[in-house]
Amino acid sequence: MAIQLVARYIDHLRLDSPAHRVFTSPSQDCMEYADYAKHNNEPVDAFILQGPVSDREALEEVYPEFQETLDLATQWNAEGRANDCLPSDKVPPMLAAPMSAYRLHSLCAKG
Image (cartoon, rainbow, N blue to C red; front, top):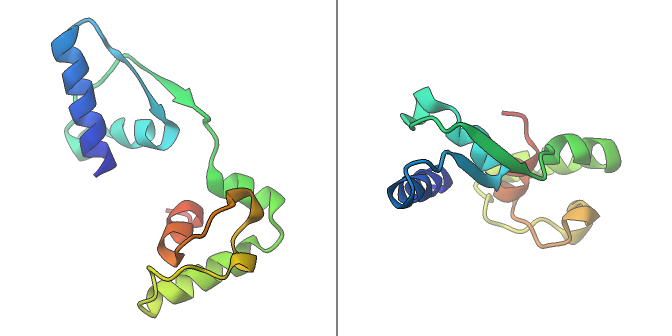
């Protein structure tokens, strides 16, 4: 869904100014949009990446319970509990928000 919104936004910018060929968005959206073959998107000349860091790689480095938390989220997803919020002591403090098993898995799992 986010990629469709990004694509619509870029189309809007091009209508307003056909010379506008640089796009800024959260890094994950830019990277997904740039998979031109997958989404059949028209290429842009450049992206300005905001906060170009992998959440997963950063959490692996600074959160000792990373794998335990990811395993719990994976288990809950498999059990049909994807929308259940994980216990607060299982959510990395730097995320500082209630988090469903699905959301944590989507941020932290490889692939």
